[in-house]
Image (cartoon, rainbow, N blue to C red; front, side):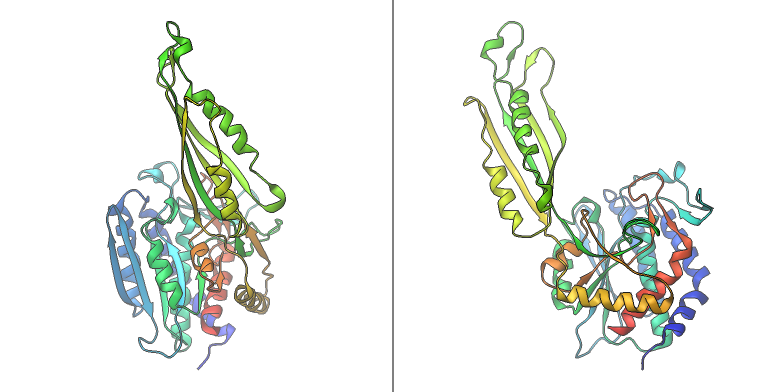
Length: 392
């Protein structure tokens, strides 16, 4: 049995008030990555809602983080590979942010109704959309294959504890739908696009050791780690190659103790973005090829590429073409876009699993005080997600 587009849209629309209320409840349940108890409160909410839809739950406790949560829908035994829906419940916002960034439903300056609040776009709306879409599909027909909704507790800080779970489930799956926000706003260059490519992400750290001395009494004996680091960062800045999509950003630096001490220590943290996996080796060689100019100083380079690029392969292209066709039937255009930001979809695409990203809400202000979603786009995008689940 299959579901028609009108059936699925009607199923999403008929339950809209319930799911909007649940989205509000989830946003009010603040869940910063660094607070495991808070993240698990959000996991508890999702687990309860999912079990109400018949989900089977597998929960993986993580030392120092919230749990990794697997929610399984559809047939437990099937000859078809699962479909993986991928999201996270941690946010960048510390507890208490609601005092200055409250949940609210209010129009923007152009009069478009929006929902505002910490984490509403990145990515609590996408997670709620997934459950609403699954409910609509289950009401209209039998799920065509097993579906696993994986919710991670640490995406905002690099997915150190959840990556293994993401990759394990992805390797079992036919495809991965990532519930991160769409790219851009309607009418913008990207026009609320699905994401078919993402840059890979890396973090490098430079630690320079020099020789401390009194800046007034014994200046010549000192070897400044700060000055040495400054020279190295000038070299690092020239690693950027916009033509190949490589960007290198020394974003955080530190060093020294007092202004009257020649500093013996200095460090920098550097963000790296790459478009192609083979660029990773080149970037690593650049960083490990750095040398101090003062032989009495030393340099230690650590880090590397921690998210491979999401490169739009044939499987991803097929998924996007299917989504675009279904969106047209629902009455809206669906462009595709690439982005410099990373997601857990980088891991699944890096394994060669067809991965379509940006299937969550439409809005702006992720990680910013104006974080919000466009309410008018929520139901059509949820219906599209339901269509994609039913059609795969």
